[in-house]
Length: 400
Image 1: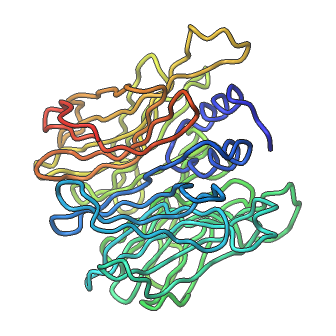
Image 2 (image 1 turned 90 degrees about the vertical axis):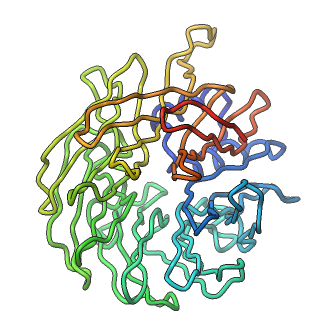
């Protein structure tokens, strides 16, 4: 799995620079050179007047990637940071707060030396109290490589989505992998599971609970976006497909005007990508689609709805670096933040490019502004997380 820097950047461009390949960056790049520092944030949520972020870093003697959860006050000062210091490499992708103030984080990690040597992961769910003390934990694995990407609340527990696939060119007949959905009780015991799609590439990337149903979004067959609807017993009601997405498909879903708003990217005829927003009714019929086109490759990763019913999206663009003298294509990556009004008419889309490469992963509302989580790569090869605060008019107010 050794790869030089140019090849790494080409790989990043191919997978469209979304948050879900953070762990791939680590495995491919940091394993080769353990002197490179990595710190990334994948998801942020509001918790009262504070906020919580999850991700990973390799700030340890052995340079293993470790999943982390951090609580900040409203001034972005750390209240606590907890490292899930078990196994080998690991990462948290999402987090929620329950009605008791507990924090439940999901992701993946290598639980054994064999997993570490083979690069395989198991899904991970960990429950912390409001002060960061570990209460419960559990792992999940069906096929070689499993991960949890998103979590939401139900009345008596939690529903989690993700992926479980063959990862080592295994040819198998298992029908249990692909895009996965799992229901846990409050002590993180599995109550039911279900799955959809092929066991080599299918994945659920985000999850939403609304009106007694569970909705998931993701990708199958490498370039087909999917939206699935389940009841609270884990029975699938429907799954719809959207052809010709990038290989991450759909990565965000929110409730919008009693409809479902989904984010991702669509491929053009020349295989470049454009940011995509789709509006579905609750029966999974498309009622509106929005494509953002520029001179770059773009994708929309995550979405929120603000108090004015505006749609705010964050994502990433990739543009060919014409100054590069390398024989393979090298891309420059910039963060994207965009605003659409309640009729899904574009208000503004802004690119952020400060360092060698910048990526936006999530967004919340903080002190009446938009707080974006992201990370940047630097000339020495390191990756460092950052927060960028934008005004209502999408003016950059602060970078930390």
